[in-house]
Structures are given as structure tokens and as C-alpha cells.
Image 1 (cartoon, chains in turn brown, yellow, cyan, green):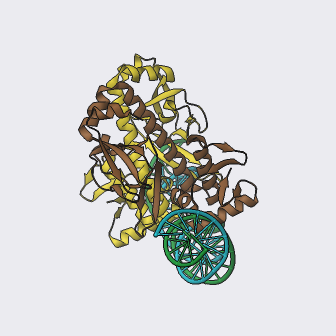
Image 2 (tube, rainbow over the protein chains, first blue to last red; image 1 turned 30 degrees about the horizontal axis):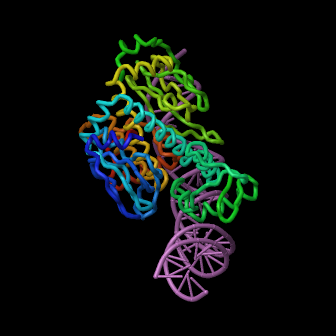
Length: 198
Length: 198
DNA sequence: TCCTGTTTATGACCGAAATCATAAAGCCTG
DNA sequence: CAGGCTTTATGATTTCGGTCATAAACAGGA
């Protein structure tokens, strides 16, 4: 999102994380700006009895964990490497100078935050008041529209496991599996080789 | 949040809305930046069978409905005047010029979006995986910490009706009423003259 | 002060999703 | 290609919050 060159001129450090490794934890104060060079990261919460809720997945070129950086606040969730990752870290103060000194970057940040807020608004309304099938369709349609999924002859292929869909919608795997089967029967989606197409 | 003077130099128009009036609707493309001069506004969704989910309440000096303005997207929710309101509207293009030409304003916008994203992250995790009492306590504690509620001798007074708490947490009034009673018994909150104190 | 609408309250009942248990099907990886 | 982990699948049972009905308490306006 921000060019590596620019980040490097503001003390960016390159760091590797192994699959499954925690990058930062819920409740801690932020110290860096994080931008993914390669790999996949998820931000998630665990409730009192260990159930996971995924706030979002992040990929190459994307940044994550900025909001608390701009407020004097702690992280609302954990960041965990889903695959092996290479990530650029910029110290908080250097990063704040960077955006103050580069107007076009703040516009990019605004767009980025706006996009994430939009996603959260849509999903919050869904999770709080719609039935499982409706929630899942919304998640799929949102993913298709905004995460540029390529369309094949069978429709868009949703590259999420049932467990991931459950964690993103606040449902349980079994419920997701049953809902998906039911939607297939209704012809709202297709299942080919266990993958969901829409 | 942005001074009235500055907004006025970018074609701001003053408009009055009556209590209950719709300011903009879910699904429409945004045409303005909205900043409240006086009154209260809520952003909300209605699910298929009419149940309301409140994304947030907004007051004097606050702006709302910006995210879709920065993306080419429609509003994810409705904006409705909770009380009679006076609101400043700045046309989209004028507003985009405004932030491009006033660096300190983009920083303010970033902080604003970051704060809202933070709230949504916290509540999304709650709504998706915690029990009613836990959700309500989180809503109360969040309101206390970030909406600067004054502390009296009986604790912080939560100025929300049970219906509003229900709409903010995705629960039903009856559930909120029962949960609040139960929490009072446990001594986690106090009820004085039907109002909740914590 | 009365009247009407809103907010809080409470009980009975229901149902959908969570939970629990178990297993088959895929898929890596050594 | 065998063995083990992950993912998908399915049935039985339970539970908690939603739903429905009803009413009391309160607030605000005429």
C-alpha cells in the first residue's frame, strides 16, 4: 500500500514470522506500523471459552493494526501469521512523521480505513440480525465484490474453508456446513470438489 | 470536528431535519459530507423482518456517513434524525478538495475513522461470540471510556434505554431487561430510578 | 389532572443453532 | 503409499434467547 522505498526511508525493518506465530496481542499498546511483504495474516479474538472470531484476513501489500496507532489505545484483537510471512515494521513515531510529511499517503490511509469500516458495518448488521444462510451469502458476495475473486465457468470460487467462514460470521462449523448444503439444494451456490462456487 | 468556518468556505449548506426524518438511505450513493451542528442522529439497518440494528449514535460536532464518500460505494446503513437536527452538508467534490487542501483535516479524519473502526472491532467480537450479559457490560464500559460519561456518586450513569442497548448489541429488549436485572443481583451494576449505573 | 404513548417488567412456550459424538473423505508429508 | 492431520459430514440432544402475551410504571402534553 505504501511503497517499500518510502517505508525504508522511515526506519522500516524487515521481519519474518512463522506460520502460527503471534505478531501482536489483544490488549497491548501498538509500537509499529505493519505492512505485509508476503504471506497471510489474520486478526482475531478469542472469547471466554476459546471460540475464535476473525476480524479479517490480510495479504501481500496490505497493512493491518493501524487504528490504535492513531488513538492512544490498545489492540482490540490479536494478529497471527496464517502462513509464513515477511513483514515490514515501521516504528510508531517514524510512521506518524511519514504520514504528516506525505499528504498522498494520508489519503491512502483514509481510503483503507474507510474500506475496512464499510466491511465491518455490513457484517455487523448481518451478524446481529440475520440467519446463517443470509450471513454466509453476504460474506461470499462481499468477498467477491471487494477482494477481486476471479470468475471461472462455474462462477466465483470462494477460497475459504467452512471453519474460516464460521469464524468470520460468528457461526459454528456444523452450522456452516448444513447451511451451505441447504443453499446448494436451493441452487444459490454450487459445490464442486468441496469448494463453494457462486 | 471541522470548523464551521472552513466548511462554509467549501459550499457548506445548513439544513434542518425533524425528529424521525431520514437523512440518507442504505443503498444510495453518497453526495455529501454531513456534520451535526445540533441534535442527535443514528445510523441503522433493518433486517428482513424489520428488526433494527444500530451502528452508532452521533451528536453535536460529529460527522457521519463518510466512508462511502472515499470509496465508490453505497451507504451500508440508513441515517435517521433521533431528535430535531441542524446539519451542515458539504457537496462531495467540494469536500474532497477540502481534505486535499487541508492536511490537518485529513489527520482528524483518520483519527475519526480509526476510532469508529476500533469500536466496531470490539463490538463485532462481542456480538459474534459472547453472552448477553457480557455484551452489555462491554457496551457500557466502552461507552463510559470513550463517550466521556460523567461519574456521579453512584457510578457512571448509562444514558441509553433498554431498547437502544438491544439495538446496539443485536439482542431483544426482553433479553436486555432480564440480563440487566441479573447483573444487578450480582452487583455488577446498579439500577436507580430505572437508569443503569456502573 | 387525565390521557396516551413509551419504557420497563414478567411469565410461558418454542425453535434454531450450539453442542456432543462419531466418522468418512481428502490432503500432505515422510 | 502408508499414516496422520485437516476438513467435511451427519445424527441426536440440549439450551438459551427469541417470541408472544399481558401489564405495571412512568413521562409528557393537552
